[in-house]
Each structure stands twice: as C-alpha cells, then as structure tokens.
Length: 321
Image 1 (tube, rainbow, N blue to C red):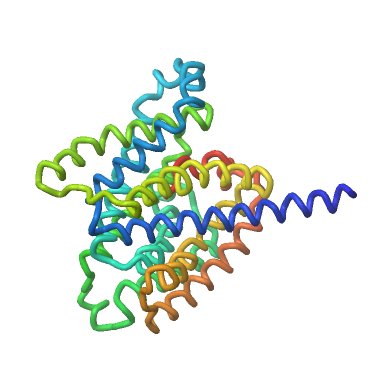
Image 2: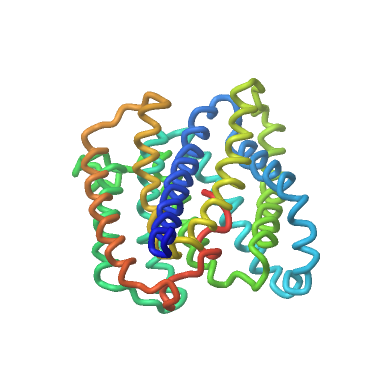
C-alpha cells in the first residue's frame, strides 16, 4: 500500500468515526425524549455522569494522581467548565426535552457556532472571518424558522415555546463552555474529562435528591436501564474517545465542523425512532442549516490545523453533548 493510499484510508476511517459520533450524540436527545415520563430530567443527568465517572475511574485515577500539581493550580477552571459543560448544559437539555421534540432540540443546536463566535469576540477579542459569519447567519435563520415554526407572526412576537426556550438556553451554555475550553489547564485529556464528569455529578446530586423528595421518582424498567447505559457508555465515553481519535487523523478543523451535522442526524432519527412528524418548517430550516454547514466547511478548509483560529483536537470536545 502506497503512502497516499494509506493516508486516504486513514482519512476515510476518520470520517466514518465522526459520522458514528454524530449519530451517538443525536441518540442522546432521542433517549432523553423517550424516557421523559419515566426519569426526572436532573435525575437522568446525575445518573448519566455518575455512571460514566465510575466506568472511567480505573483509567483516570492514575492520570489524576500524575496531574495533581496542575489540578491544584487550576482547580477553579476545571470546576467552572464542569459546572457549565456537564451540570448546567445537560440539565437544561434534558429539561427542555420534556417540553419539546427531539427533532426541534437537535436542530436548535445548529445555533451553537454563532454563539461560540460571539463569545470568542466578547471574551477574547477574536474576529470571525466573513465566510464564517455568513455561515452562522444561515444556520441561525434555519434555527429561527424551526423555533418559530415558520410563522412570521410568532417571530415578531418572540413567541417561544417553553421547551424551545430552555433548549436554546442549553445551546448558549454549551457555546460558552466551548469558547472557554481554551483555558483548559495542561493536564491529560483523561484527567480533564474525569474531573469535569465528577464536578458535574456532584453539582447535580442535590438537585436529583430534590426531585426525589418532591415525589419525582424513576420508574425502573428495561428501557430506563438501557437508556442509562446508552448515555453513559455510548453518548459519553465511546463518543468522546472516537471523536478525539478522528480529530487526530483528520485534523481539528474537519472534526469540529462535523459537529454541525448533529441537528440533521437528530431530526432524521427522531422521525424514524420516535415517530415525530417533520413539518415543512423543519425542512426549510434544514435547508438553511445545510447551507450554513457547506459554507462553514469551506471556511474551515481555509484554516490550517495548526493556525491560531483552530483549537487542538483534544480541546474540541471534553465531554459529549
């Protein structure tokens, strides 16, 4: 096998892994929607991260011990990112899925690139290129069409449903988390992931307890057990390691741009698995989002993987949505 064919084969494997990761993350929203009547949202988030933390423990304990001096110096950053990316983001997402369809929730996530650009500009003074801005505008227009169900009157009244508003809030939180990932301390990826998982688990514990005290209990059954297994093992641990392996093969620009495919996988899976109906406004929104994805991919291709505007592969994802 020649060097060129070997490189092409490696790149194809990277694209396949990225496609699988997007399916796994889209499945997270599908599962959250499917078990909404059986598991309270904060209890579901708590169980997900507790299980993921315990499963990662055999590999993370030694890594945390080796990185402990850096952990002590940067504990506030690690705690803040854990609260944002694990506890708050997932709490809002799972709560929103109690009042909004999985298709709508995943399509709203197309607004994340726009919010990331805004946070980068406000917090770090980073300017976006024109192509990036146009791509974001297209994606956000697509999100607006979906959120307001294609009705101009609703848009003018800012008539947002409760679920859509909460899910949009989760996208804002995830975007802030993504922008702040550049502050991640110099520790190994396993250490960072394990500690942010742990922070999120500890932060969610009292809220899960409050749900239980309020009479919101888990209705255990095979479906609930399978849901916990899916979000902890596949949507968290497996997706994370697959994403980082693909990022090292294909480069951070390609891997980061692949995240914008998540809304489309989510919409298709919600229709196939949950039987949720896709309306005309969903299709118009998808068309605009696809236009933004295409232009965003073009813009990402103009950025070298080692350029200042591209984050290193490990910084693109330190926990799964």
